Image (cartoon, rainbow over all chains, first blue to last red; front, side):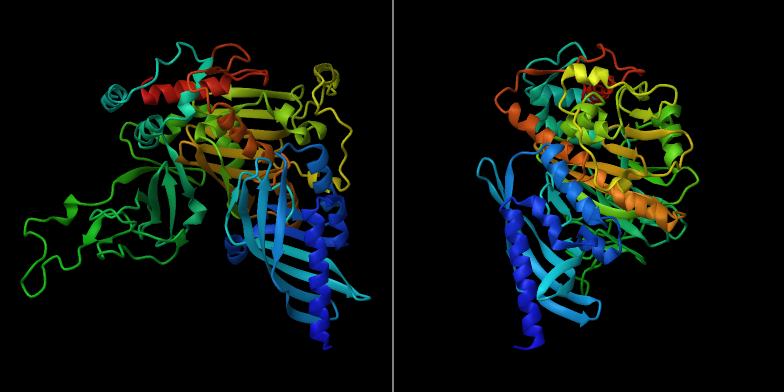
Length: 158
Length: 420
């Protein structure tokens, strides 16, 4: 197997785990997909194109990701809902000593308490992975939503 | 107000409006005819509406498109430096003149349908084939370009904000706002160069007025939003007040660090409000800001009737523009601001504190859904009324924020324009 195939497989596996973690509501484990000194941002394609720095979500430590989850669990009020992530094949863009950069398309269906299932978000993950011992950890994940309009609220991470 | 009276007579309003500011019939959030009347009486009536920032269109030829109620609007800076606003509607057959959100270097706008052309002030300057082709067809000889054009808005500019109004009746912007509101806009924006650092839209599943009520409602802040109270961003027992302007339509709610008094938790404990938890942040740097106004005011929420919000929550500065989409759908446009002279550290604080607001905001998230809870809750109760009685029955400024005075003020102003 070539290195590219191997990297693609390692990243695809990590992302499959990531999606299952969120969709199975094991959100407390979600920060573990990141390194401690990470960047996680949810933004829009327009903002990304225009170079606007502020995201819909912005975290530059894993502790901030943990805070997101504890806020969701303990503080924030929102109706019961769940996501179903469907991810495309990761496209490995660059590999160097610092890690691997990849891009992956996603779409997320949001399932509400009353059964309403809507296409909640489509977009792409712009990722920077650290790969050690065949395991990929996110140093950076920029979630670029295709649309600039978010319906009602974005509670569960993408 | 003749137009208002005519409209009121023409529509079948279900029952009279209650003779008090403390009751709001739920049909006001539901009816198509109310929504349609609002478009003419409020959105195209005597009120100012936020259009954009001066900084969005710094150079001649820069433009943005936005909405005033349902009406699509173009805002453009002309070669003389003036800011002009006019309907994004071709005078010919009504198509959108401009299909982009923004752009630069524009000399004129040409409708794609039949190439009717407008200058940056919204004047019709050309009609394709006006003289016909080979002497045949074309417009009648007495057709005058100057007789046609999209409706223009009056433009008001204040501390980098650009407002527009369709009505000649609207007082000048600073008169409309009054000194108290103007000075608190100045507090955030005067002599500073705001830069947009983020933009997104939150689609709200409710009538636009339910969101405006929510913004003006200081009563809910410490109850619905655990984040505020736990981190002492906005304890009601903090020093603070509500300012309601004379018209009722504009308001400021603020809170400041009370250096004389330690906040008492006892009042909260007595109410058994769930906010009183032991919740702690793993990374508290998000709330470690800097005092950029030198007045200990940690929160200032300011509204301009009907649909403009200027927010300062610590160092999270934002404009919120409320755009009604239907009786039960609203777009909330978030414009997250920094300032040109932010240091990198200050900018990072703003990026972190932006987590407080927007659709994923630790605070604002709930405001995105609570309007929908009301819209769904009242679905079978158009003739029932909400109770807006906290803090009395008037619409005046108050030292207590346990009041709904600014909501009553909104209805006072709204009823004035709607003729109720």
